[in-house]
Length: 297
Length: 269
Image 1 (cartoon, chains in turn yellow, red):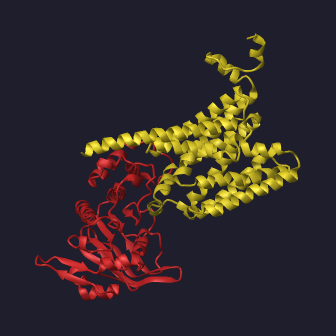
Image 2: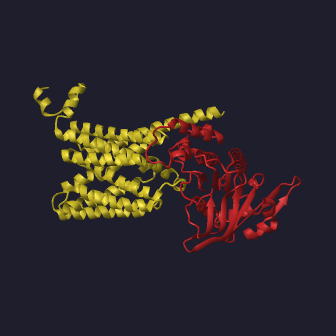
Image 3: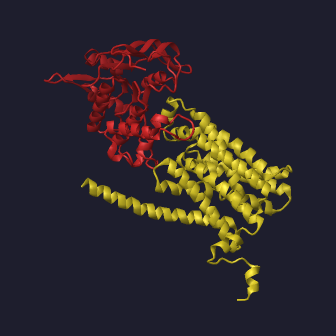
């Protein structure tokens, strides 16, 4: 093989140091890794509570509502992230105020979601720019991230993680046992609103990486996998964050070498890991079930 | 704070009334409960038994009259009260250990994550779980446990906060007869050992008859309290429930109430 082709296209070898140097050669890759890591961390941490509170669909809908905000902002000449934050945070506050009543409202949430996508479609049409904008918001554009975006993401990501840490115990209490938590003086309703607003920020960040449509991969999948392997909430949160980061890193790395969309790879890793987790935890469950039966006998 | 001497009143209600908005639930309730008393709260569905607990917890403001709990006006977040609300079974898919549920009873309302004194808190959790004899399954996901096992762990959660008063809303519902008796006796034993005052809402009086000091009836927009022998008579119960109820006495002097199961089953359907 002539040397020329080696320098022309990146290739993956067994020399780890060289591979890493290659991976981080360009600023766009550095930015992608920096932003991707922060986004994944906050998505994983908050995702644990999303799954525990049964709000997966609400989180999914929240990102779609963000699509209308992002495209609307562009029409008005602002950056997408501003519209994204305004729309998701407002919708999140409303969802949080509804609290437990949100459960089982799939039809209502679904309709708001569909209408938001429709609204986004209208804004995209009005903007006349190109479909590229819409595609970017729908599927993410992590390789287009600037160092300024990274800074904004770092602030937003740190704030969401710190806020979750700050409300960790009462949030867990209110999630698992709302009535007792309320009796113990936990401000259940305010927490519900606060949680959805924090989620809105995390969702808006994650849209940069995986886009509106693939949000499940970073917020729900890692937590759903973590819950299969630990029954301790503290470990579940940490495991979900680690998994989200791993999916992001793996997706970015593969996408650097194989010129297919990064969103495809991140969702593939998330989906593959979820399948694997189901198979493994099923096997584990059967084994422990047998031991329990043996102990009882 | 040292516990008040036995017999001193820990709940004092004076012409108390409960209402949700304009809807009056019951009124003119005057009664006291003494420290260490075990009181069964009975009455038809929808008569306002849980409402009474909400008043005691400070989650509902009295519509009229006055209420003192442990010498203070009721307020949410009272660490001296352990509470187990009425519930259907916990969702099977809740992927959280029973032990973590119990732990929330100690520090679940504190902000942030647990830092420091984790060892002593874990010990308290262990103690509470041991007290309710749930050590064998405390590390399994709580959703996968039986109703009786869940009830024990929820009781442990209430106990972990080291309360002086326990408010239990239908802890015996959805348990089989054997477990009803077992849990009722467990609560009575704990109450005696730690000098706890207990208010326990129940549908069926029978498993509680050997245990309770007094019975508090919530029915017909009012509240009545008395010793079981005074209140649990065919005439009284039939009047309170507006349904034919018979109190039988066997040769050992045990009482048995017939007709209430049908009454509750009818309402629950």
